[in-house]
Amino acid sequence: MKLDRKEVLHIGLLARLGITESEVDKLGEQLSNILENFEVLQKVNTNGVLPTAQSIPLKNVIKKDEIKPCLPQSEILANAPRKDGEFFRVKAVLE
Image (cartoon, rainbow, N blue to C red; front, side):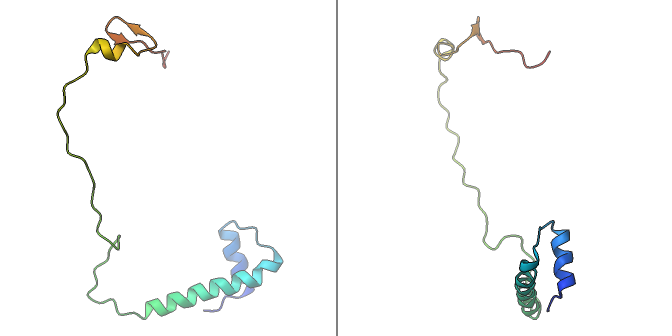
């Protein structure tokens, strides 16, 4: 499918591209080639092929939970820049 100059300029406007006059012919040729490739793909028989969002199967890689003993509270609070009794003290985020 060959795009004319007017169509190339319209596509450039829709895509918010600042196409210069020297780029119109080159871009028109490139877009036409892309559309020709899609015309070839439209001829491929896809009967019996299920639609898919992924070309390869996805699999979550997760680590099993391991139960470990907690650190003592005093050890955790030892590194706190500010503390208030048994709690971390932080600056107020809301008024």
